[in-house]
Length: 191
Image 1 (cartoon, rainbow, N blue to C red):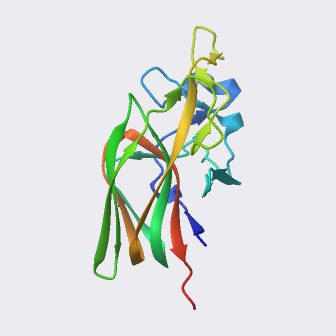
Image 2: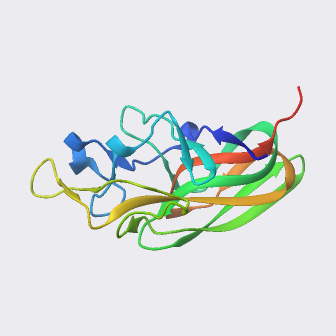
Image 3: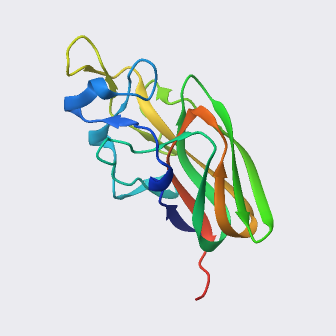
């Protein structure tokens, strides 16, 4: 049975993906100021996307809630990892990035593709993606407006690896790729 170990991304978070209704003009996912609606985000609660479990931590006081890829590394809790799951999206179409799991002299490197973050219409139930109800789009009105023709979407990507005693996670630089959450697929070590 696959077990999930949500990883705390707060030490490396550096960007804002979601805005509340009253602050839509603060959107910063792309150059047009678009954002996910924060009202849709399951901050601080388990989120199942297909058969994968994630947790997105509460944003900080400035609204920083995710990782924009800029060559970050993060210490992992000691565990035997058998894979990784990422909840991510890319601006301007699909984008490549690399994750590397290091531990005890071993490395597992995965080349991944984050799909684009805008879709037309609702997700199919069997697809591994989190789809918001609308797009926050700043307009002439200080409150901005909603756009329902394109829906912001985060995709769940999972890859299995040969078991590794994971200690460190490295994420390559690819600034148009955004990660909302990471869960390690794992076996719990006995204490």
